[in-house]
Image 1 (tube, chains in turn blue, purple):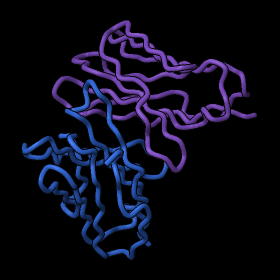
Image 2 (image 1 turned 135 degrees about the vertical axis):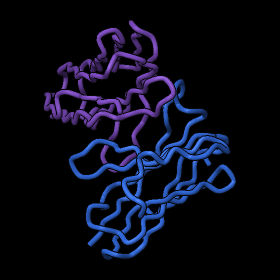
Image 3 (image 1 turned 135 degrees about the horizontal axis):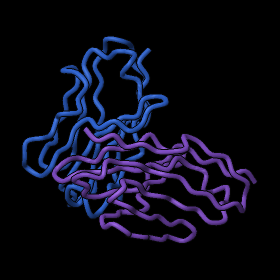
Image 4 (image 1 turned 180 degrees about the vertical axis):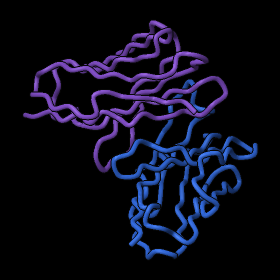
Length: 115
Length: 111
């Protein structure tokens, strides 16, 4: 597609439920990132996929968070047993490579609210 | 883990004023720095990718400079307009590491 697409744009869920957030990157972009921004905070790195390499999961805050990228394209971020502190805007970005020379193209984000 | 700082946290200027803000990052093992503009309800938009000490880039009324030896970058906006109102993010990366974002500077341009 022309841009990075994320869905849903908004999600309200009850504490303890599982949620799935989807990211469809720009075709041909090998690098895909998930970030989140909690209220009043900066962008927090979560996970990075590069081609067929093992993902860099160093930013995932707990084992309730997981992500996969199927076929080198679409990615799904799953949060199990959601907690109120998981409420944030979750942003996906893609890039031609690791982004050193190109910058990231971001999606419009998913605003997650855990009640 | 890198610590990227931005100042000021927020800024209010009058239409037509010029303004600037700062991104600070560790200078050792520096590889690249990005500036983004993030308007409310939209995606962050890449403004500049900077890698070389002394780099100066310009896009319309917005320009940026980079000092990798002392670890800072300035973003300048000349003749601010209400449509410049946004959060301006910088992100810095060391060799072989992922970008770390600063907390942003929230700019409000008052008509």
